[in-house]
Amino acid sequence: MILRARRPRAGSLDLSATPGLYFPVLRPRGLAAAVSVAFACALTPARAAVKNPGVYTHLVAAMADSVGPYGGNQDLLMNVYEPLFAYDGPAGAAPTPLLASAVPTRSNGLVSKDGRTIRLPIRKGVKFHDGSELTPEDVRHALLRQLLLEPPEGGGLGAYLRPRILGLNGTRDPDGRLLAGLMASAERAVAVEKGQVVLRLPAPDATIIPLLGVGPVVAPRRWLASKGDWDGTADTLPRFNAMKAGELPELLDANGTGPFRLERWDRTSRQVVLARHDAYWRARARMERVVVKVVPEFLTRRLMLEAGDADSIVAYRAHAPQLAGLAGVVLIDDLLPMSLSPMAFFNLGLSTSANRFIGSGALDGEGIPPDFFADREARLGFVRAFDYEAFLREVLRGKGASPDCVVPAALTGRAGGDTPFRTDRTAAEAHFRRAWGGRVWEKGFKFSLVYNNGNDLRRDMAAVLKRNVESLNPLFRVEVLGLDWPAFLEAMSSGRLPIEVSGVNASYADPDAFVSSSLHSAGVFARRHGYSNPEADRLIEAARREIDPRRRAEHYRRLRAVELHDVPHIIPAEPTVFRVHRSWVRGWTFQPLFPNAPHSGSFYALDKGG
Image (tube, helix red, strand yellow):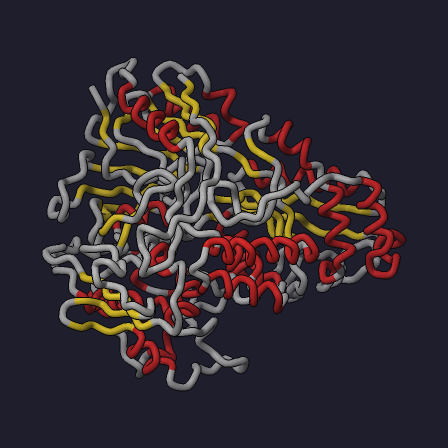
């Protein structure tokens, strides 16, 4: 059975609901269609006897090597831990209170008149999985941890929270030393007063509540310290400040407030088992257990779904024809995600340390120099060579739209206009002939275009780019190479990938989530790839502070012009996505902000009908 969601069109920024906070509430038209799809799915009768009625089994292609609260498997994380607010509905839904008992607004008195002080009332009676009770100090510790612990590879929620709460893009000076007075500044900015966590911002910010809707998730601070994590003191901060996420002992365990607790993490069989948290502060989850298992081969995943041994699986666009029409299986199509994936990011300053992806490391026909893509003409050659129509037609099978800019259509704030990303082989050749003073065309190049195994869309984008570029000049050689996730993550984080084939997911429900990470010099992608433009930084920061939607849109219009000129990335298309599960699955709704949606999601409301 195939169900289709009518594609919603972007709405407008609606600031009226929260006049004290100035953050956008998305109101796209066509929303009812997506809701009705989920409702129709819930009413679909089962075609076969339900297998394992108390256990929900979800199959994935790959899984990060962590289940801790500050990294790893984000979709599992949000079932075990909880943030302050939730965006648990479709695109356009307003936040709902979760660990905070109310969403701050000026009208309810939790936001000051100047928009710089936000009070977060913390829900009482919430139990962690170990039986201890949630306190405002636990929430404060979670915020301070995100603000003050900054892994060497950057990124994470802290990279978004620091400029908004502390007015800082980082925690260390250029020599790697902790900034003077950092801990004291953070303790003043995040305090506990009368059972509330109080944030004092350097300036009003349009994105702080959407950000708190995705994190930080909260674990008991004393439990974290007992596991060897930071204890929240200034004395131990230098030791933990630059620690890599995978080095933290608590990543081997979990202790949240969510509807499921970690029962078993079996690395041998590559599966995680979650058990229902019976002391959950809301009604208990309907499923007794959830099993998330790695099955790399799609054919095996499909056969297990067809046999009823899996309730849902991860599948990509190329797999859709093999899933349509399976008995007892529902395929929900034409869902519009808050993400852009795949994308290709040019690395303007490659790391040369043990870098096997750049060949000789010189512009001699057998490699590329580390600053190869610092030449705008080289970037434009790749951008104009890529066949966008072929990717949309052959890879996505027409399920998507031409790209416009780095803000996807599911979010407001985009500038609109004719797509700048068009194929022009004549222009591509001209750009390559000018790149590096003509030496690129004369000498050629050789490098590896790397993707993570299991992600077929990224693999296919890499293959299309290889075909397009190599067809221009026999001296152009691009090797498409797949790596397992840990190796891909290490190569990506260390800045050794000439072109990073990855993607941007909405970290929060605001256009800033995309432009900050991709175009701001302090953003995770821009910093990793050496992209920096002071005008882009200025426009992003001005839009973040702007409370007038028309002025904010003007900032984004100007930012789009900067993006088109600098071409720091390739956006092949804006794909629509689909979800596939057994027809006995009840209660699923599309939550675009949930990690790995629509394949994964909250397991809390799911049930298996008989």
